[in-house]
Length: 390
Image (cartoon, rainbow, N blue to C red; front, side, top):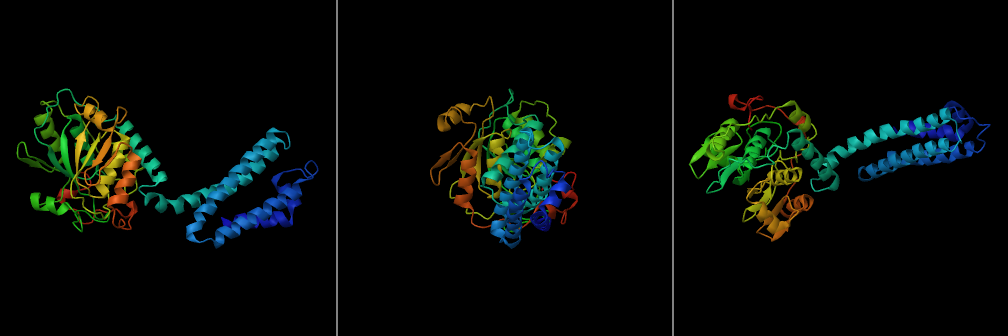
């Protein structure tokens, strides 16, 4: 990319007339252009050299500058053509020259930014991408987990759930929990590696599930009201609907639908509730008000999951009896909110919450892995790719 840009610029500086002719620009009608071409050539030679010699920390900034310059060149060519300084053919030739430089620069920036963006879970770019993909996911799945079912029956005590929000099977159960307006004590169990199934590693709560159930299948739920423990998402949903849904028919909640798979292709970051991030264990569990059908809440759920922070989830979808409590604690316009009794932190902003959680509890970096390292190594008959819940 730099060689093409620098070489074309050097050619333009040495032979501006020939370059103009190759671009279809008339020298007779644009006598000032050879001078402008040389100015452009010097600029681009300098930019190409700076990119080649740049350190990794500064190359992204230079690429952004190059993209901005090329975008300006495209706009300038368009305005010049609109003003009648060039005919339509010359204008398009000038635009295409800038586009030819802009495209590889954009690709290079995307490649360099991939790890940077997806390894900054509290950064603005990451947050926007995360929120957008979460919004599309909730929209395409018809906002399941956004409304309380009329037949919902309150539970006397909060249920206990071991799960991680990056798992589609866990999301199915979360949607039903929201539908039934249940309170749940969450113990996050994100994967410790993307390269193999059923790994304990340094997980905070996976060993607990292994001891309780003898296997590592998620979600795993315990109901202190009835003494029931289950670890299959379909069985959990059927149980919840029968016990707290008034026996209502279980809705079809496919975790492997085409729309869900398409949306998950936008959620490739392991910070999206998949892989654990080393963290400090808070003395007291946090409290989070939110719904599985809210894009902002999903962003917070993912942060709580990756950091393995235990929290009480107070589901408060539309129609929930807890909406008044949410408004009283966080304001009438709030749709979610987090309370940390350990520090006194209270916020209804998902961006502020995510930044706070990572700044307060993260104590190490996530394993240097990407979604490309995903494999089914270690899978058993209970952890097949079609019905796995790990």
